[in-house]
Length: 203
View (cartoon, rainbow, N blue to C red):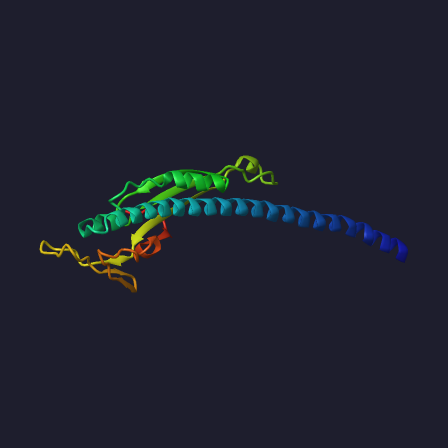
């Protein structure tokens, strides 16, 4: 009787064991699918961030070059620092960076104060096959906006300004005494401008 009862108990436990194992396998596949989707989304956001920053950095360098060319004309400084001196032409760089991160980019310059770029990307690789139907054709998307803000301030020259002196340039905690006769020591792009990501589009 005991042997028959043990055999009966074992027979009843086996379907339960199969159910538990099957449930655990299903759960593992679900976690895998979620992980695939999350990795794809993270890749898209990384591509968007890198592309937006690349566009803004490209424009920052152009603005710096323009300031260096006009350093002896302080009346032009404000337009340069406000980003109005050069066109916002960094989208080519954004698309290049997106392609390097396996994504395509739609880049939109955003003039204003501060100027910047809004970039929307879509991954070239789909999420891939999983237990979730349709993921093999789903591409992740992400958006990022980067802006260029000038770090410096100066006293605007008046009508009686001395042509032989330049205004002191105050950039964060550093003061630059600019000597028209000796322009070897000048602030660099990172001294003049701050480039960073911001949340969403600006008004």
